[in-house]
Length: 296
Image 1 (tube, one colour):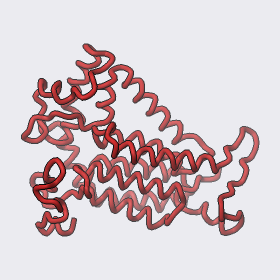
Image 2 (cartoon, one colour; image 1 turned 180 degrees about the horizontal axis):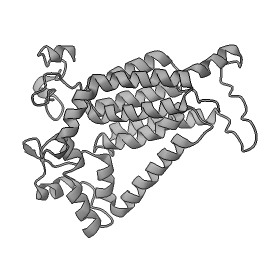
Image 3 (cartoon, helix red, strand yellow; image 1 turned 90 degrees about the vertical axis):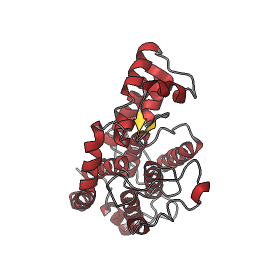
Image 4 (tube, helix red, strand yellow; image 1 turned 180 degrees about the vertical axis):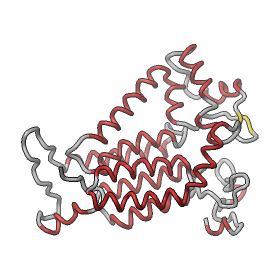
């Protein structure tokens, strides 16, 4: 990102004209600060990978402070508006589930992130109604397509038909006609119609219940929220690269849940015993970390 700010695109298109699919354009119009996409096709997917790996590391309890710092810095460097907004939402949830002292630390960090990215986020949100902008193309422009889908093909379109159908709507992504849906939620509705809409509602309820339910770690509670929010990142939710990252996070969630003893109503929860970990003062101090549930 530093090299890009100085005018070099060497780290953005390392394979030059042999870049997969197309050469990446790291700059938004009238903005000299580039958006880092890693080795992916767009910053949003870069933020998705960074955020998912960060949560996996936090769930396994490894390198807590370093993981938080690198994860936040990575999302900031990607300059993905979706990633930044989801990061702020998750930060608020973590603050609400943490002890008072830790909550102040989390909220202070969110304030720094908000100040650092506030102007950029404002410019992206202002392009919401601008035809041809990436924000408009991802969220607003396809709504007519979805409305027609629910009305005329209630069980959805055939898989792989999105390009041909979108060409009939003259939706512009920049200066080019758009031939894809860049929003995973819209992809579900497009291909599965009303069934996809019901599935989205079910996923939202599951994420909300996980966030509000007690008896599990904060990172285990926000992971379903992250999984639901990542559907906004890209329309490629059926691609292997998206499935692999999602499966890794779900597998980590399952493994962590198997090592926890769920509390029963009216009885105190049993202490959590992990391999190589003995209950005691050293273990007790871990609960003072950010993300430890607040005691009533």
